[in-house]
Amino acid sequence: MGSVGLVTPQQMHFSASLPLKSGARLSAYTLSYETYGTLNADRSNAVLVCHALNASHHVAGTHADGSVGWWDNLVGPGKALDTRRFFVIGVNNPGSCFGSTGPMHTDPASGRIYGAGFPVMTVEDWVDAQSRLVQQLGITQLAAVIGGSLGGMQALAWALRHPARVRHCIAVATAPNLSAQNIAFNEVARRAIVTDPDFHGGNFYAHGVVPQRGLSVARMLGHITYLSDDAMEAKFGRALKNGCLSYSTQDIEFQIESYLRHQGDKFSHSFDANTYLLITRALDYFDPALAHAGDLAQAFAVARAQRFLIVSFTTDWRFAPSRSREIVKALVDNRIAVSYAEIDAPHGHDAFLLDDARYHAVLRAYFERVASEAEVPR
Image 1 (cartoon, helix red, strand yellow):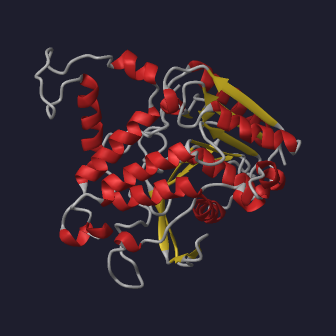
Image 2 (image 1 turned 30 degrees about the vertical axis):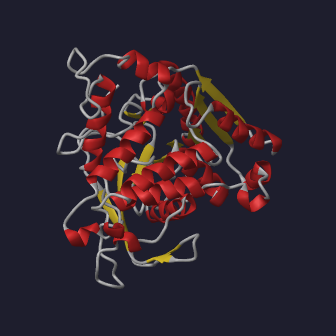
């Protein structure tokens, strides 16, 4: 198994505005994206990868600065999503801070940085933006769309919003909507950001500052929810930072405190505060059953994908297996073909990013099926 090697991000500009679920419109915008592998003659082997909260279009390979794609362990020649057989597309969603038009960019209508004025985005809005890019690449139907966590929500939205354009839908470590507890975690993280004195109502760019303290706390809170108790205990336990207690209420005493502060500080230097608010709100808003009086089966009645693959992890308490089983039941109720894998992994929510052999074997086997279909002459 190898890497796709050195990759260079591409950009696609759209002059036509994007209508949004809120009723607003996103003016002319640009999407950053990457592709790996080769599109076959009948354009039937394209797989779209949807990213989660703090990821981007950089799915696989290495950038010139040495950064490695966030799903490089899954995507590449000989890997589960084999780029010798598939043409893989990674798109950075609008509102992000990794190249696509977002709060850090200039609003063409006002000539000023969007800041807090960037329109609120939903999962459905992102899928519509991705759809435009896929069309511009000359692809009328995707062999598959795949994503984990928030990316899994986008994969599901593809199957519901553009049902004829998806042959296979793969949703990993995700849910049909957020629980009250998950919304609560997101709200605490947002409050950490908006109450930072450097936030300035979201227009901190004009003040030449960044709400790093708020972003750091938000990341620390989020990171706790991505790990299982067992994983955290195995990695850190009650190990002390300096070998002995200092009996201070403000100094770092434990290794886990040091780790979380490091993660928070690193994140606060690389992520945009307004983007964090936008993306966590999109998570909150996702609820395909809402338009159907809470009936998820009715929401999935429009799906036309040949088959779904739903994957969950036993120790993922943020998107528990029970939430994945809700999706499976809705599909079964509609007599839609679905495969379900519940992986007994110790890592918590982050398991979808890691090298679990059983998890990767499931995806490899599934993509073998998808590849065989794509290679049949049409």
